[in-house]
Image 1 (cartoon, rainbow, N blue to C red):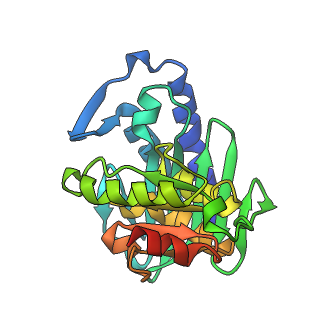
Image 2 (tube, rainbow, N blue to C red; image 1 turned 30 degrees about the horizontal axis):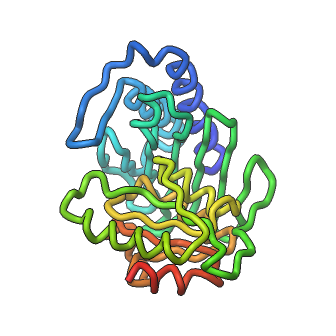
Length: 254
């Protein structure tokens, strides 16, 4: 199953890479405020679905552009064909393909593929997390004041900007730095491999978080909602970090 996910991610990545060479002619459509979609999103998703359905025609699918499709209750594929569409539109090279597989509701496999750097992040439940076949672990950071924290703005939820602004101010005052790159799935993969020590965001969808969350867990990190519970996939609020600084992250966000 992981091999099929990797094949699908690479196929979508090749479509995205070809399109990035001439994105001046992109047709961009707004799904809602500050949320965009292009033909490349749809083409990449179709490429993923084609690979998955040929291998597992009875599996359920939850994809960003086409939504949910019925299938076996045992397996569900959670797909974001192009996470970071706004970056892609502007030629800002921070976007990826994210594919996760849930088995009876629990995360079982995850793939995040960055076509710009040809970096393939993978994880399977109980088998660890990898970057291009090299085992990865979360960072060894033990002091919150020395941590580099990733985040994402709640661009779809204007009503929560004040809450987020207070969180951001608090985190900025207590850490070594904050970064906002614009592709949550890739940010989570960066926590898994130690490039970021922590990450939080509000207003995410399951396909933004599923693959990356499993990678962090398999790389030795902790993932939860902002209350420290396991409801992030439903609430869309996620906080994750290395074990030593995770309590400090939650305290700062509260």
